[in-house]
Image 1: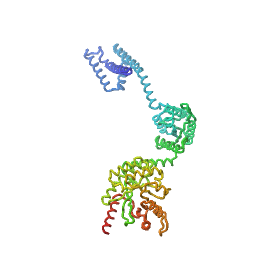
Image 2: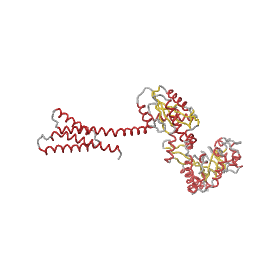
Image 3: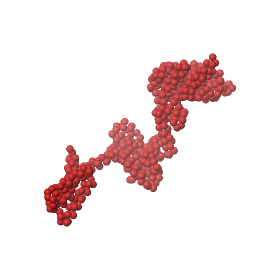
Image 4: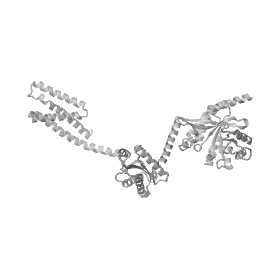
Length: 556
């Protein structure tokens, strides 16, 4: 048992004894030997007092208000009897006993409380102070700032978020001890370059925050931020090396509506803008840029939610054989987002965001497997039915792409020759050598490769000969530009190139019968576009294939 615990137990015993003695003192008048009733009449009141004392101790486990009432009443009654000359000598000794116990209790309290107070002070300091820099920590800042913002004021309050650029590099090159020295130096410079009533705290890692109450306008906060950065940028000696602390700052003024969380979020947005502007500068919160960033944040959250909820689906656009009466011989798989509020969202509105979030490989892998399963289902009735699936730039650079395609083909059972993987010309030419290597490995699996939007990039015939391509898809812009009454066209030139390299051409974006007939005359072979069918769910393709099959049987 520790020393403080022992003293604490002794103090509790003394407290209990004081309560019992006080109750005996209150019962003394009826227990006085001068009172009639004999010994039994005197003992019974004392026993009743002891029982009442035990009840008080049991009811008041914390020895709180009941204890003080009992002791106060006993001393008051004893004082009244003493004034009246009615206090017996034995009761006087009992009063002295209660007073002595009080002195002893105070002595014990003095032995315990200093240690306890020191422990509590130390814990409070640890809870609200950053141990590395000695500044307040996030908890201290949040509690104090919320109190400041809750007070009505005619002036403005600002928040400056300061971030040290390059702390990780200092840790990597000079070690974490030098990084800690850098943080301490930055904290010292921050503390001495703000106003007396400002509050500086370390939020996390290399990020500090300053609370500036009592401002007349936002420019005053910007001036403080710029002064702080100027001081921080002065050279500093660390581990014998002269370094400059490069820092950026974001400034925001409270609007009195969304509290501390809102102003911190706005200051963070201003800090992001400062970093985008090259760093080492202070920037004010811009509501227009913030609105765009908030819109982007919500869009990102919505997209990730949609992926987790399985709201995406695959639609298919038919590819027809122009030389065989426009019969559908394959489809191109196209992803769509079935949004619960916005309805069917086209890929142009979400694929760029998905690419930036690194979700296209995940989404593309799902589309590939869904499309291959569906193609195999169609092949039960229509053998050799082809499935075209697009590859993005991030998929092409995915080191697991070959393995993923192989596993999808194995799981679904689709013959590799009936899978056509499409990539745009611009994607293929990003890294021609690497693209050729990956596409060659894909062709080894037995799949075919199509070059989409051919002619829109900056390809040359040498590039076309380098890439292991089987199909070229003529861009819709060339199809739309074909003259209605003959004459040379880019589409015709692309078809000539395809025949030269023994590639299968597919014309995209065919919108009317005239274009379809013209492409047929030019020997395009296959085409797709709204003239034949729009992208549709799998059940729509199934109905289209059944209808075409019935028409063929009738013609036979």
